[in-house]
Every structure is written in structure tokens, then in C-alpha cells.
Image 1 (cartoon, rainbow, N blue to C red):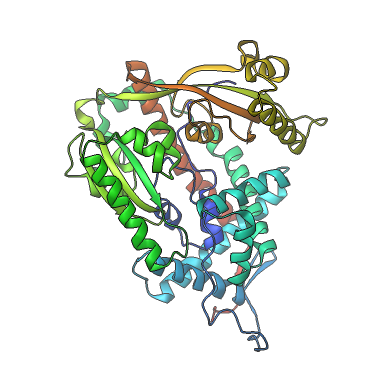
Image 2 (cartoon, rainbow, N blue to C red):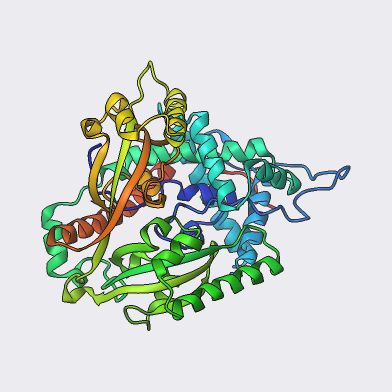
Length: 471
């Protein structure tokens, strides 16, 4: 598989915003771990006033706004508003005035509707396997099975079919956004040279952005809708982990043992990046901590984080002399064709995984016989690679694997993969790797800016008619 130095991005971050009806910008605030998979959580149960009891008469509905001939109704707006307010309350955030939140939420729903319409007009598809994988991700983040997820949604008055439909729609929008915007962001060598000469002089630079950080984390996850007793118990567990670390415990070993973050396979390391690419919560918690120091437990929407400062330098003094974690992995790639559907490829690779686990087959032999990648001759071996070396969907799964562990089949823009991590190591950051880190930072910034422009363009081209104020 060709290496692509894309930064670690969140192709499903907007799923959270759609499912939970978060206002603009809140999705990233909810997902505190920058290198973890998006924390897809179950919708908050509707407020008592939004879901009428059996036998109660529901107020008459009406159209609030029409987007390219498709309506958004008052019932839809009210349900999303109440779910959003409940989520913010659960996270301990201050609620803005309802009128401001309502206006922002309606605008977000209009923008989402226009993007979904554009995605449906494209030739992109989301098959049932990709949808099921996303639903399983929701269940894993909430530490329940899919069956239990379904029961909880039903108990909260959330229709399971609608829940799946919303996730499918957002996956579709995400694929369109990746194809039309994110995959086209390029960074020139001249831009990298300019950044290395004057990191603080680039447009938009700030004091936080001028600081380079390398943090590691251990996440003790808190399930959605956890009781106060559960939260207290999990906080105590996080505090115990912190005490073990202060007593000389190995951070990487404890991350592998207890962390719920996708970074656990990297010893908890989130990677060297400018401070503005970390959640403000993390930056604030570590601002007075020197390299080697610990902070936490820090509470976010995902749970309790324990942070370790691995490196901290002013970017103006040059990128820090740090170490990076490299992973050596191998994979089997099946490319999709009219004769081989995504579902068939997933099924075939799932069979390979079972054979490998039972000792009936060797991964390298299967790769040589079946993989449709240039690495097939080497048994699928991709060599040593730093974080961010491959496309995000591949990197995310690879980073979460422990050495010798084999992944479930994963879908990327290249096809369907089966991945096995062979080993990991820490190496000093070379001049070349420093340039690639800068390339990744600049590309991610360009992607973020391009996505905003793309969303604004789709919203600007949509015919929007506001009918009646939401009630």
C-alpha cells in the first residue's frame, strides 16, 4: 500500500454532531482525545417534555424551514434541541440562552441537510458492513454490546432504525467530504521551509500554536448516561492509576493495561504537534508541567484522562529533539471490483483472520497468495512507519493494535484490509521526519479550512426558505 503522510483526522467526527445534535464546533470539544477514534456515543434520552407518554396527544407539527424542497419540522428541531441541552448538562457545561442555541442548531441542521443532499446526489454508497462497523463503534465506546445498545436506545425512546439511518447518512457525507476536500490538500516544500524558518510568523499563529507538545494519555472511559456512583468509581480508578505512576509505574505498560484510548498501543503517545492541535483542556492542564511530569485526572466528555508531558519546547527554538514511535505492520489488501463487493471482501478477510487465529494459516503466506498490494511479495510487510504514515482509516486501526494482534477487516479508500502489527520501537526524530511532521500539521490546517469553505459553499448554493419560528 502506498504510504500517504496524512495527519490523523476524524472522518467520523461529524457523526457525533449528527447523532447528538451538537451545535457547530461542539463535536471536537466532546472528543477530548485528539488521536483516539471519534467518541460515538448514544444519544441522550429525550427530555420528558419532548416524548409524550403513551396515550398523550402530541402537538401538531409544522415546517420550520425548507432546504432545496426538503422540510425540517418543528418536532425535529425540538427533539434535537432538547437532546443537545441534556448532553451539555451531562458534561457540566454552561447552557447558552435557548434562543441563541436554537438559532445555531437550526443553522447547523440546514447545513447538514444541504450536505446530505449533495452526498446523495453523488455516486458514493455506504453498504451494510460499513454501517454495522460504525454501530459497533458506538457500542464499544459505551462499553456495551450492540444488542444492549439497541435496548438502551429503545428504552430512551430513540428509534433504532432512525439511529442507523442517521449514522449511514453521516458516513455518506463523510465520504463525500473526504473525496471532494480532504484528499486534495497539498503542502509544498516551500511552505514547510517557511514554517521551519519562522513557525510563529505564519498566519493565525498564537502563543499556544508556537509551543510544540508531545503528550501521552491514559483514558478511563465513562459510559454515556453513567450514574453518579459509576462516575465516582471511575474517577477513583483514574486516581489509583495516577498514584501508581507517581510511585514509579511504567506509563506505557499502564496505558496498555487500562487505557480505553486508541493510543494505548503506542504507550499512550499522541504525537508531537503544535499545542493548538491538542484539546484546550489538555493544554491548560499541562501548561505548568515540565517534561516528564504528570497531570490529571482531567475530566472530558470521554472520561478521565491522565496526561504525561513527554516533550515541550517553544517552536521558535526549532522543533524539539524528541523520539517518535514507529510501527512495523503487515496487511492483506483486497481491492473492490464489480466482481468483488465490499461485503464479500470483508467476509473473505474475516475467514482469513479465523484461520490465522486457529493456526491453520500463516499471515505472510495468505498475503503472498491473496493481497493485491505491492507488499504482497514481502508477505504484506509494510516496513517501519511513524504515526500518520498511512491514510487515517488505516492508521487508526493499526495504532490500536498490540504487537502480534490481527485486526478485523477494515475499509479504506484503497479497498478492504486485514492488518497485523509485528512490533513497535522508539527512534529519534530525524530531519526528514521533522519535515513530515510539519507537512502533516500544515495539511491538517489546510484540510480544516477547506472543509469550512466547502460547507459554506454548499450552504450558500442551497435554496433555503424559513417558514415559521420553532416552538
